Length: 163
Image (cartoon, rainbow, N blue to C red; front, side):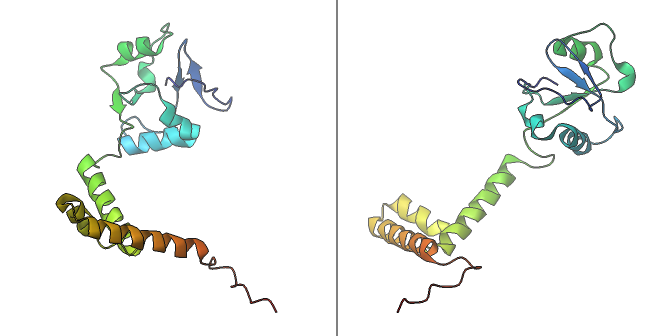
């Protein structure tokens, strides 16, 4: 792994390279990508997402560890045929379209909860240039935000009037 500004804890089973580290895991190499990445994350936490390689994280069987190779790229070149990449971009099986679809649904729920109408209403008003509908949505959203800020938290009792 190549993670700038990371000092591996002593308890990890690693081999330091000139420009990275090899991290040895107690997970079979033939595990799926999610299991492998989960094992890395369990070992190094959020530093996993600091990996400085757009290809992701490279995994290879311990038996193929090259001797005498001291650089990150050198290790990958030496064991490329035996290893595999795991992408850090998105969870396996999740497409960008699916993520956007979820965002659209979430935004729709947000607009409706704030009393601004549905997201479709807002988009339609923007597309048609309906300034009155946009102004109404803006007023409704401002009112909803003001009520949310002024509302007591669920665990607080409302203030009693002073005598």
